Structure formats: structure tokens, C-alpha cells
Image (cartoon, rainbow, N blue to C red):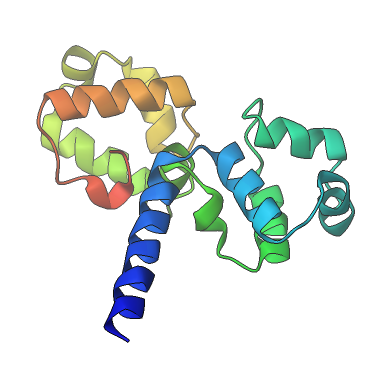
Length: 155
């Protein structure tokens, strides 16, 4: 009995570890194969074109929030399980609040972070940042040792 508890715990830990280290495409492919669904059947079940499913699985494009919900519904999971840290960050309900708090904490955004005030104001207003800017921002914040923002999933 004890062995089963340990094995189950290990499986859960490995799955959680997999969740954070895998790309969106790897996660879609994992859940599709776990449910024994072909790309063609997944396309029919979700209404997403088969070529798009392929592009998602090969990380050519990110799925929209609506398509993430469709995929998650078929897999019977929360859409967050399909997201990587970038998507978790930009779809976070506190996305705008993050930029307001960061501006308050840092002050001079342009000189400290290297982003124009105009671009930063757009993000603060709710405009989604691209992955390249996300990675740049994350790396700068880690370099500045600003770690208390993990609630926004930017690590």
C-alpha cells in the first residue's frame, strides 16, 4: 500500500514538472496521445482545422484562448494545463495590475528595463506583449532580483 502512495506521488510530481518544462505543442500532443485521439479526430471534435492542430503541436503557432478552451474541453482538463509560462502570464487576470505594480516598484521603466514608456503604457492598458518581450522582461527582472512577482507567472 505504501509503495502505491509513493508511486502515485512520484507520478504527480513528474506531471507537474512536465507541465512547467514542456511547450504548448508538447502538452497538446501529450494529452492527445493520452486520450488516443488522432490529429484528424481532434480536428473534428474541436472544429480546429487539422493543419492548425499540427502547427500547434509543432510550436509553429500558439493557439488562441478560444482554441485552448476547445482543446481542453476535449481532453477534459483545465486550459491552464496546456499553457506555458508565457501564456499563463498574458492570460493572467491580473496582467494589467502587474504592470501598474511594477511601475510603482521600479519607477523609471525606460532606463531600468529598457522598454519605451509608450510600449509599457500599452501593456499597462492591457495590450498583450509578444513572447520575445516577455522573455526579455523576465530576464531583466530576474537580474534585478525581483522575485515577488511569481504570482504573475513570469519565471
